[in-house]
Image (cartoon, rainbow, N blue to C red; front, side, top):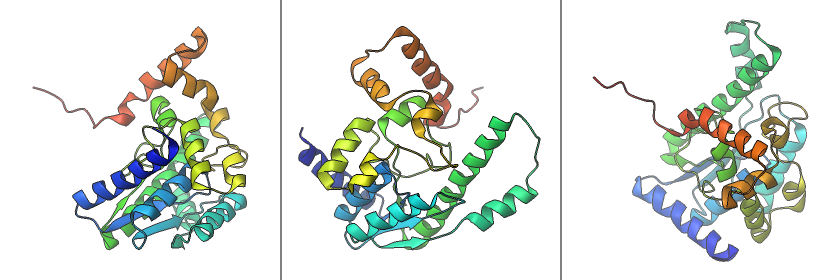
Amino acid sequence: MDTEQRAQKLVAWIKEKVQAAGCRGVVLGISGGLDSSVVAVLCQRAFPQNTLGVIMPCHSVDTDKAHAGVVASHFNIPTMEVSLDGAFDALTRILPDYQPDPSLSQLARANLKARLRMVTLYYIANQLKYMVAGSGNRSEITVGYFTKYGDGGVDILPLGNLVKGEVRELARYLEIPREIIDKPPSAGLWEGQTDEAEMGISYEALDRYILTGAAPEELKSKIEAKKAAAAHKCEMPPIAEF
């Protein structure tokens, strides 16, 4: 199908899922990145009067907040801002610090930010009787590049069947601002963080492997290892059998 048909099907799918759940609309986090911008526009088309974007800075990069505002303004998407700096600081003061490897400490703090955002979105969604839409795409889901019960804690994933390149095509069709399409993908978890550097794989190579199975053996092994390690993120918790 072409990009226009894909957009129309996704809008219809969002509407169907929300209505089937007996909900009134959709709430989502707008980060200023490509994926969340695309989801925001699709949700706005599905529920023009009942879509709410939430901007949730948490010691974030100023550019991300600015880009989130650009998207909201450009597409007339109602938004609210909830600063999570204070909540994050309060929790890191009282939570135990085991002083592990510095990379593990950084990961724990990054995951805490994602989980605070999840809690915030569900608090708002519960009050409005909305569903929470996530922005995860097929490329990230495949290798587990998301936080369990963080950005992975959502009700619907409209982009979950699209690799990153397909999301970018959809963004161009939807006329997402060029500076957002062109900037290096990042979860904005710390200064200078980029998705590809953290995954250790380019989206182009990952997309190609997912769609065609083609990749050098070393890359195949790397991707399959990530898939295996992250399998638990994509399943309900296992239940012991007796």
